[in-house]
Length: 230
Length: 268
Image (cartoon, rainbow over all chains, first blue to last red; front, side, top):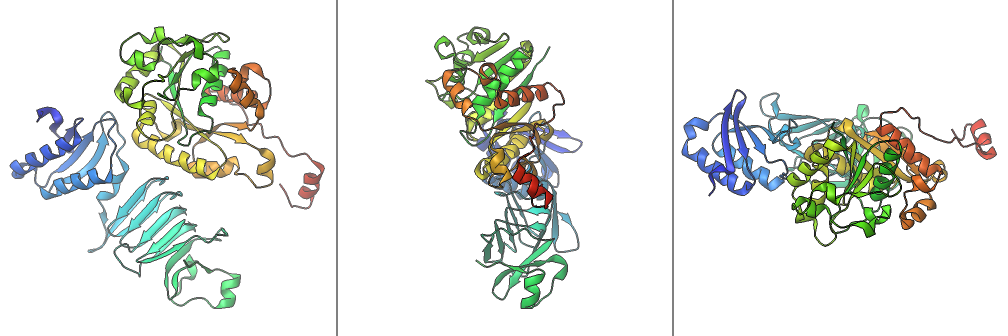
């Protein structure tokens, strides 16, 4: 095993771990090093630096976070050599804890096609979620912008979760095990809306008129209540 | 002196990357700059054909990277425009023949001696794409007014941001093959619709025109052979790349019917 597939340095922000080309081997090597000197690494924060051309995939991320978590090392940031941009998936790995039990994940970013963010707790996106992007949370989802992609709230089965957006025009909405898609006649919503699970599937209503029972028929006609079913 | 490297990319194929590279390069050279057109589409080279320089190829990009010759030796000087050069792609190799680091070093080298390096990116987002974007300072994203093209462009903008280290303010979009008559009838996406989604600045809007097909087949950039609206759009685009403030030529609809419709508030 080449010794240079991994370089570990200390810095004032935490431990800097630099990976060379062979990433698979580097992660294994890192795992060994962490295991061999737990006292040194435990409780510290790590900055992982990847080769310039390495493509980050979910599998790799999952393995890396697992290896670090096993030795009580917190992943502070993940970035590329010679670059200051932090790779996006990592922003949400350190939730800002609000309250005692639930974490709120705060993401200020425009999510483009192919981007995916998952959160264990409530998820707030400040920015648009473009078509082809996906946001998933075990709790509620709030998009302060246009929600045009796919949103899945209550991903571990919580059907009381809600999805809110300033402009709710998602390709698909999922809450718990319910799925609804955009209606074929794409009507533009008149204002901020909220989606929740009603008696017959997912219901979309005007945000400020959020009520527990469905609106009467005539009000639905004139004011809000775009009812969307699969 | 160090020039600027601009990658021309799109994600989706067939939207006009190669045509734009050829014509933007020609327009920049006509404006007095030295320009290298670098065909990064290894295995499916086209730029030489569009430029009409296919029969002059001796060395190609892979030869240069492998050290068979210097890049200067592989450059083909355009016969019509001073200061315009082509570095052709290899046709018999594939996209894994070069590594991103090698490509980056090559682009850095060429930038030392020329004002502009325009990199013609292959379609897709795989190895060839990564090779093409790695050395670029700026990116031009070509998009046609179709939902699928816009979707792919959106993905590419995200990838450029993450993998190419090109900041959003250095990304520009070019809307190709727009048909104003269809836009007016709301049958085609408008430039502002595309802008709304991609949120990057617009560098050019190119009308749909048959003359492009003719000039491409003849191997002559349209900026040389014609003075029509397409050629003008490329000259304007070059001007904007050079930092000039050129307004977009949006011809208002002056027909009688639309005037009547405007009067009654039925059209804008």
